[in-house]
View 1: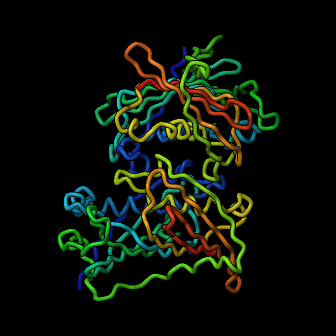
View 2: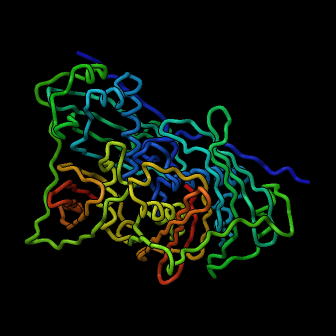
View 3: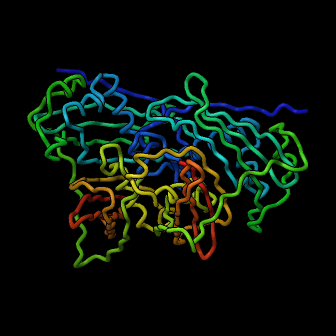
Length: 248
Length: 248
């Protein structure tokens, strides 16, 4: 059995990565763990430039995120990641955000595919870009929970319109996947955000959002025992682009 | 004569601080230099928490920015700042962004006031929060160029509407001053931004923008010799909140 390559780096939380409660934003949490995985890929010489030469790119399709505590401004945190499993079409990567003393603030699992830039569809993962991570090759990679959808017939739905801005777009001309969480969170009221913190997130990406598209971010609330759950859906260009359940 | 305290720190440019051209965004450029000045203030024990105890806060009112080159993703840059002059009501601070070899990418001058949080108006700068910077006390601090306004009668004006989002707000409940530049830049087309880089910016803040306000970002273009200049104005709640001239 392989031992997967484990990568870690330090990160200082700055004021502009935090919201008005001085805690890191959920979107920034995704941005920084992706940074760690990109740095690991560079270290292993299979960075995005190498993958781009094959006219391909890694795309995250699902996250499942457990949050003990969100890092606060000026904390020095450690980002840890390893690519744990892969098969012909999917890869499974874990992330941890840890405090100064090694306590886990956040633990994330994620599922990835490789997209062919010509067809804009997923394609078989080339061996040469996955083997360096020394993940375990498996038949089936673990499934992550699918977010429960909003039930428009029985639930009160709040929504807001957004336009994809210049700053939402990355160098691949599509929306940085963390920005979906900004749209999801912005629909909630500041009063709610001031008095609640996210404990768990299941997030699933379905369709690309592109520059200039209008975006509709919907939310409804439900209860699961003592847990309050917000159910989020992002619609763009007539399609559902992403959905999430956040437990508060 | 005093020698002002000069502060510097390293900063790595990450992918999420850059736009689709892989250069740091103009707004992020402001965010990181303000980080350096906050770190200097902490070092000198006159950080924002200390100033907040007086029920006051530093507010930037003007920037004049020369850009040789915008830093690119993964560059390690150095942020340098010093508070150079002050008088009873104003302070004058310089910033530099330098590359690995000490070449200056960006040089900025800025004017600051202290706001009384109770009245939301500027107030006399208390000695104890300004003396530690060892800036020169002067009668008049240097003026910075005022942005030339849009002439609606003769110029073609393009505009876009924005809503102040949850993420635009800092822990003082007002809009992070860097975000104005995001609204200014977003009105320009991706084609324009892909083929032009900012060489000089004069930026002036006039009125606070608050959560929930609508924001109208206007732009017109004019020529000054060979230079193309975009003139920007941000309106919110019936008032002009900020204006800028950007030379491309």
